[in-house]
Length: 72
Image 1 (cartoon, helix red, strand yellow):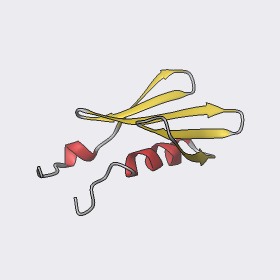
Image 2 (cartoon, helix red, strand yellow):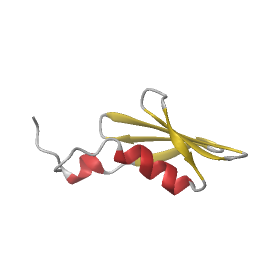
Image 3 (tube, rainbow, N blue to C red):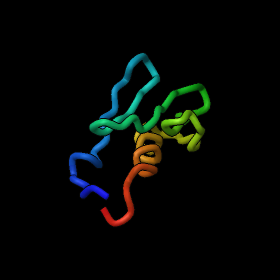
Image 4 (cartoon, helix red, strand yellow):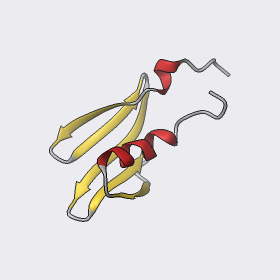
């Protein structure tokens, strides 16, 4: 098991088209967030729905937290 470094846990989010963001950390795709008329839909790296949120930041946090290693 490799040691976790702070920069490995920081997610970078990019809006690749209006209303659609993808997130990653170095070497790892985290998932996506897409806006529709009902809210922000968060999906994990496999495209599985994480949830729907009223705020884009909440949606990105939900995706990012799925990848934080316990104890890191």
